Amino acid sequence: MKFFIDTADVAEIKDLAATGLVDGVTTNPSLIAKSGRPILEVIKEICDIVEGPVSAEVTATDYETMLKEGLFLSKLADNIAVKVPLTVDGLKTCKALSDDGIPVNVTLCFSAGQALLAAKAGAAFISPFVGRLDDIGTPGMELIAEIAEIYANYDFDTEILVASVRGPQHVIEAAKIGADVATVPPGVLRSLYNHPLTDKGLDAFLKDWAKTGQSIL
Image 1 (cartoon, rainbow, N blue to C red):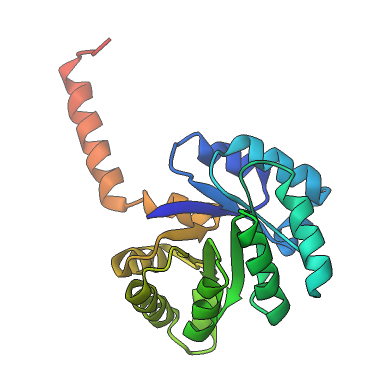
Image 2 (image 1 turned 90 degrees about the horizontal axis):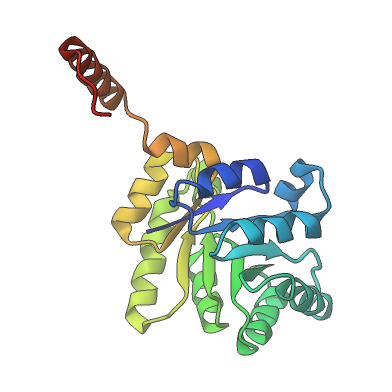
């Protein structure tokens, strides 16, 4: 499974990219707004930090303007993936951009039918929002399983990018199903390597080592 970071906080991205565990970044207008910085400046900076795909989202809702924005965003860096919403105009834009060799992340997916349409439109990534489905009492991971089954039936190249991840269990469940990518807030990625028994074990090892009076270097 690949890990994308779901943030526009450049400092967080730099810190986590240094671990070698970050395969890409997803942004959206809400995350950019939280950064308080110009959108194009932030996107360019992020693209310089990570080698993998950086999702940059269009803000228009009509096909003609979406396409113009998508083409513009795609030229900001070689690793841009244009992000479009799962609407009719978004799918039309996805088809046009993907036919032009531009990777597209189709976002705000909440049903298997929507995911099927995105794959047919040539999406590089489909972003089902598992947390938001959980919020309304619909198990988000059931959608991931449905999409994985459908995509396997037809050998679609579209990667399942699990979004709206609320905690480490979402990541583990998605990995068990076989999702290609999880895009996670920085805190969720850090939580994956934290465990109290690891801390307890390390503390015991260090105390025993101190008793020997030795040094490796």
